[in-house]
Amino acid sequence: MKITEKVFESFKWIDIENPIKEDLEKITKEHGLNYYLIKDSLEKGHLPKYEKTHKIDFFIFRAYTSNIKLQIDEVGEMSNKIAFFIFEDKLITIHRAHFNFLNIHEEKHIKINELFLRIVKLMLGTFQKPTFELSNKISEIERTIFLKDYRKVLLEELYFIKSQSRILKKVLHITQSVMEQSVDNFSASYQYQDIKDELLNLLTYNDESVENANQLMTTYLSISDQKNNEVVRLLTIFSAFFLPLTFIAGVYGMNFRFMPELNWKWGYFFSIGFMLLVVLVIYLWFRRKRIL
Image (cartoon, rainbow, N blue to C red; front, top):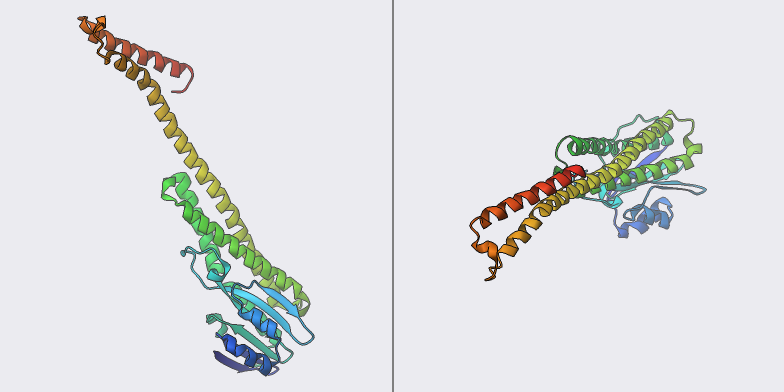
């Protein structure tokens, strides 16, 4: 467990990184925290939330800590959480992962709510890169499907892009809900308005990414089915031509003793001519039905 303390004019910021279960009781007693809130702060995969008691405002947020190139589709694999305990004169942050955006230097006179919002805004900044990368990746796949060769696109890749966009949208949507629940604490802050705008922007991008990914999967499957149908259609046409020819060859290949055509001088040329006639009739029929 690593503990970092920073003292400001009106409050103290205590950052606790990577605590283990054995540290829970110590943290609870030392800072007068609720044990179950501490437990929530360490629970893997916990989604953003907000709770208010008579002394503390408790928040859980998640920061993006992964890579869109990885084949992952779970909240806990893509992001890590950070818990905030806001007192009148103390801010406590608890998290397992190391976050570079927590290494900030603010002026001594900053208010506790302003520092909290500053951290939240930096945390939201971690979602910008994956959001834009997923959007660009979907556009690249779309160009490949429609302008190049759709077979270069893997359905598995589309699945993970869709899943990651959906998870980002879910986390950001819940984060937006949490901020709206605590609006009374920060409504007068310009940083709060910036956070609302940033959330709306990220949600819009991820919503479009989810929708576009769904459409691309549908398009991919439709094109794949269409190509398969064309192959089946081509094989059917070939079968229509060769089936009667195979039948004729089979009849004259039975080699019965009493088959007059086998001893006929022009039998070979007659059978070849008859096959060509059959092919011509089938071709004309296909043309009339606009199959060819």
